Each structure stands twice: as C-alpha cells, then as structure tokens.
Length: 194
Image (cartoon, rainbow, N blue to C red; front, side, top):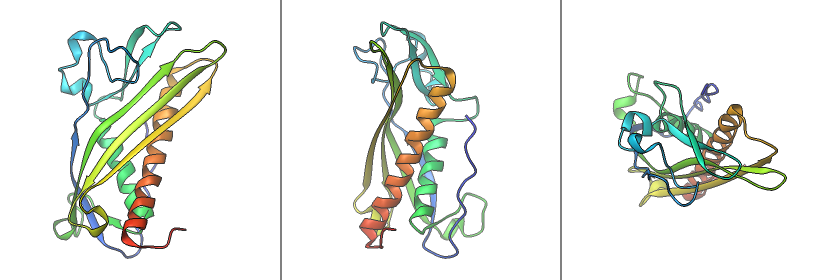
C-alpha cells in the first residue's frame, strides 16, 4: 500500500521520536462477527502475517474468504506510526527518525496498536466497508499524561468491494486517526486549534 509522502516538520516545536510500536491486536479463528480480526486457521499465530493483516474478504453472505494483507516489508505498525508522526507534525511537533540529527535528544514516544481492522458487511442494495483503530501514545510529554488513547471508526457504503476499496478505507482511517491525534495533542497542551 503506497503511503503518501510524510508531512514536513514545522520550523520549530518540541522534538519527539517514535521509538517503539507494539502491535497488540488479537486474532481469532472464525469469529462470530467480521469486525473481529481473523485469518485462516493456520495463520493466526504467524506474526509475519498478522503484522500485515488489515482485513478479511467475505462473500455476499458474510462467509470469510481470503485475507487482505499489506505488501511484504510493510506492517500495520509502520502505517500507524506514519499517521501518528503526521498527527504530531500537524499539532506543531517536530518528529525525527532513527539516524536523523536530534534523535537521541528527542522526547521518546511509544505506540500501542490495540485495534486496527477493516471489514465488510453485506446489505440488500449496498455493502458497507469499515475500519476501526485504537491507538495509545505514551511518553514524557504533558499532552500524553498519563497516556493518550484514541479510537476511530470510519465507514463507506458502496455497491461492491474491490481490492482498491480496502486500500481506500485504510487510508481514510489513517487520515482520521492522524487528525484526531493532532487535535488531542493541541487540546491537551492548551494550543489553539485551527
């Protein structure tokens, strides 16, 4: 899934570094509802696959079909980290990555992804595709005290779901979580929201 270019850092502002992303999502075999992350029976304990899993295809009756995975080399942790970094930048923070100047002096931030999943719900005349995310940010920043947990749900209604629609709903969910992170950081730090 090609990600858009990252946002540029503001000229000044507190410098942070996302030092760790923990993918804590739980997968089930044949859950009763499609909003519960699931993969084929033999795959739910394979972290290489679960770390890339974003959805599961279903037929018109809701029966599970194939898994929807990010490309090799890209994980849910990666895409949530980028959305979080963009959220910090939108809120006026500078984000540096490992190897960049200032990384060792930046305020360390960790992320915990409790939920990030997309699913399909059949309907009579149209179907609904949804994405849900729960992300917790931790670090020694007043805006993160004690922790900052954000939840996001987004849906789209359409006539049918194609491969490109999974990418679109994930991108929409990531954009919304980035905006929510920016807004929450501004509110908790007392900054003016523009």
